[in-house]
Image (tube, rainbow, N blue to C red; front, side, top):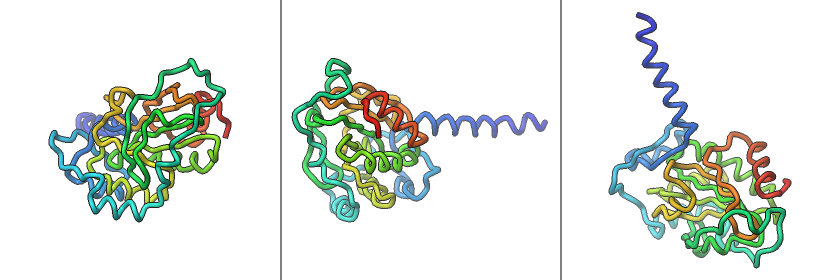
Length: 231
């Protein structure tokens, strides 16, 4: 009898752990608000037609003013230069222009060149994304002029809460926004997020990590392996 009672609970725990490790799919519009204060809560499986807040909404503008996020103008690179990664490796970044979640102009991903770059695709409704965010802030602070670090807020119905989350954690690296999921196909995001895209100085995608990062050491290792940048 004891074995019969405990098995459903055990299976539930294993299923929850697997879901957290696997990442997130789509946001649940109801209850999104408390997410930034409840990191253990994961939101998935939004119904079609979920209510969304536009990037030009006054609430987003207020949140943008409070968050100390770098301007998207800092993302734009110079003419591609040589790098440890071969220019023939990987595929070009997609010809997609994204709005800025924080301050600054919209940015064409084809402008991300001249220095190696790391693009972290995330959303405030995604528990693994929230958990790994401090690692990318630490990477941004380490990188200096050697590496571009960019967040891409993806399929997020509440950009104001994304900015509030960035403000709460002190995330200062520049943030783009992809509310329309334009990067879903180019970056293979059908299975969910987070995803981290490694881009050579020539603006070519050399690797995409479809997983959450658990440690700074793991992230730095992948930066070294895929971009040849030692930090």
